[in-house]
Length: 498
Image 1 (cartoon, one colour):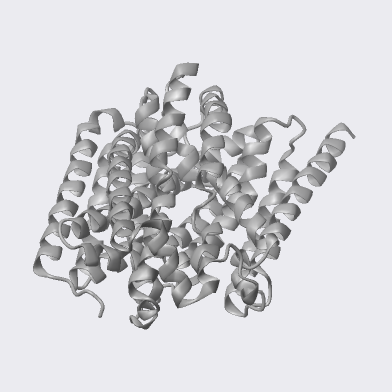
Image 2 (spheres, helix red, strand yellow):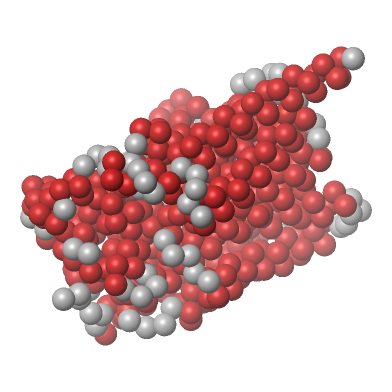
């Protein structure tokens, strides 16, 4: 028998969510004076320290996928689902902090860039590259942002038993308010607070869930009794289903490793966290790395929560309309009861809103700076600022329509698809360019066009008709992006010399 929501579940969820949103709005208004020009709104005063930057990075990294979607993956496939469900999380995010972060921070300052596409364009000395990057970022981030609302909606509905539309709409409006008012500075502070909340709530939920199923031994025993395949690290029985290759063979396993490494540096909302970082010392870098290591390890806890859900409820969640396996986390929270259920709902909202806020700020700022200003270079600073603020509200609300009309069946599938494109494209055009002096704008353009085309094709051939293996798709996209990047960069340099 599945647990049912109570009035206390609703009350605690509402209280914690109101507190979280209230604090976010407060820091937004406190940052208003630092966001009164367009460039200040985009980049702040660039004096954030390692702790706030590390927590903000954690918040944008731990999206609705990390706090809800990945639980549905391991609930469905058992331990073999862990490869796509976050076991590589630190393998991706720690190099971003230790290797790329300081270099990105210096590049932003040296090139006077206030948006990620602007930085990409500055690296290749091409406004056209910046415009293409902006368009690709916006399209793929709109897709990814849908998953954030879906995660929050699922958690709210399952735990409270009430319609999710009002809570989602209010959260979107609140997010838009603190971003439009506080800009980058207000958003960075809000993200830091949300990152701390996510880490605490999700780790607590996991520890209590594991205790409920009898610890590690009890968890694995319950899984094995249901189906021995649930405790296998890879499931050859899934080989016949191409879209499940991530849990079936070594190609899929290695592709998930590559996915986490590339998307950590390819996500613009992650990269943007370094725009406001002050010039740091080795001690600062050590502190920032430690903060991210501790707080961004939460997917490991959430894996246990998802597996515990399978141990508790067996295959019953597949019968829940709309949510299905994505109900794993919320159902565990419901089983533990108030106030844990309220903590968890607020944590999912924090994860969803923080990632969405980082994305919306990138989308609205980039579209204004890298496309609108390119087409109309004589616009005043005030006009640009107001345009970015209007776009912030627009991008905060657009994904809600998609979630209402056609919510994605399994959250992790949708978000992994967008992550493939963002990761493979910008791993080369952004991360590799930090170390390779032979980069050329033709290589960047070819890489972006190929990667975007492969992302669209994969959405159809992997997820719609299930003809391409998921791992094969990632490797083909990654290798092809690299081939295009290096080959066309070489051709571009030869052309320039000729």
